Length: 66
Image 1 (cartoon, rainbow, N blue to C red):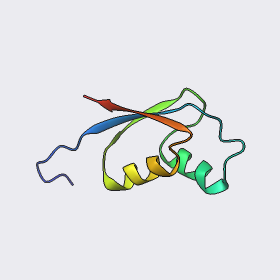
Image 2 (image 1 turned 90 degrees about the vertical axis):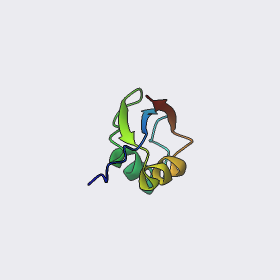
Image 3 (image 1 turned 90 degrees about the horizontal axis):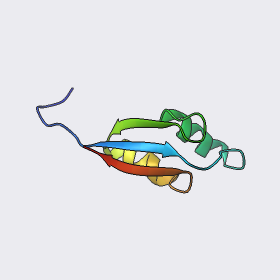
Image 4 (image 1 turned 45 degrees about the vertical axis):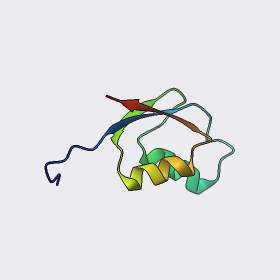
């Protein structure tokens, strides 16, 4: 569905446990493709993904992937 424009990629890593997190934060972490502490996924930096990262910013670490 890209219109010829490649979006930037970001690497998202889970650095804190989701045990004490709100259920909706747990669901957000799972939808980002993260399971265990230390797991990471590479996603496109779309507004939807950035909004999810912002919601769980206390649980994840984000790096720009070139």
